[in-house]
Length: 270
Length: 270
Image (cartoon, rainbow over all chains, first blue to last red; front, side, top):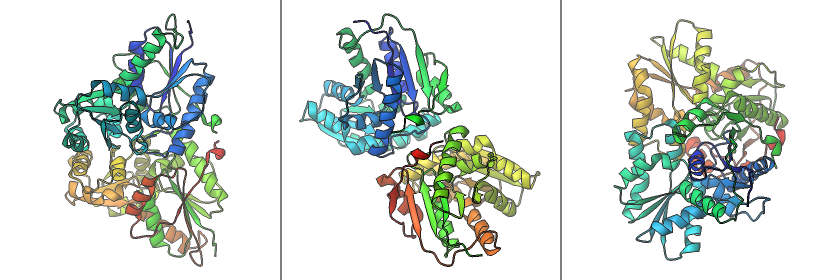
């Protein structure tokens, strides 16, 4: 089944670029449209009602861009999507369920840790997704509000970041967690800090890789039409700022960043 | 001149509550309406165009609430206001100019430091306001993107916060700054950390106090109609989340927090 339309994906801002990078790498024939809702970022500290409004507006926007599928490349928005019963004209993927499935596969001791934003942790979306697959695993959550600003400040290689990361993971080490879900698309930028803080003893699960693997399987098995050749890459944001390009270059490297286009999605407000 | 209408003020979220607290204390007869645009916070990392759209929507909203004056209790939005030539139906106060005037009064050595968000620092609004009053002062700016999340995380009394604060002020100590403007409404929550990091050698200027003093003077001198008696206090936010109430209680104490009301200002989108 051939379908040359692009795959759409969105995030509150730049974090979803880690998902974009995984998809670009795993699906070399596919075209993509990326939407970063930078005018309203971050989502992770906001209420489910507000995140839902943004989620529906972004999906609406991408559907109008004629995509064949949408990846919600943001854990906070994926969390809200999982609680939503609406149906959409194209398949909409969340990053929670593939991350949870991967964590179960790699866990050796049945103790899984989840790092996430306040929104993701409060909604217990990973807890639910993990228990839906295996009710016997123990799940330990930790909200980490400072990690996104640290990545956006570019302090990945900084002793202060190591201190903060250690502060967040200490209770999970204490609990004997063997597998750690990086439950926010910014966190893979802190993979080395997390490996250091956990002394290399926890398997680190990146939802970006998990969702790329899932979509690759859906394309191969004909559940989603495949493209013949990549024709287009587009990045759009709802606010253009110098820091987006700068952080994007850091997160995406060595991939080339397509030129940025600013869009106004406020007319779609529901 | 009697005018019993409330004074409106707004911020991207909770930071402006430090201004609200100063106004409540300095103007015991006045009524207030506070708007926290929590659905779209923070402003400080966004572009001037986007902040301007939010600024105009918030002013529009407060004008419809029949206020007699508006205080832009956010340095990033005040910065954009200063660059805007529009006229409004009621006086609109920024927090930059009163802060700059106070800094000049207390500075002994003519070397003034400014801590602010990326938006405030990039626009050089304090530099301009200071030089408009006294072209001979030297101004040293420092953007501090991590301080707002640290306050919102409640880590004021934490050695990690001291380390980060020290990192940000070190270049200003090096430059011999004698007076430091806390150019973001969250920063007064870190007054003790700043005093410690600067070894008590810099005068700390709080825009919240400066704007309260200015409005007090305008009321006393009849440039703004005074109220006979406080009748009303209202706090509205564009997103209700548990953390707003919690951080609000911390920043406002010992003042009583009026009950929160959620509002949707998206219909005002320009």
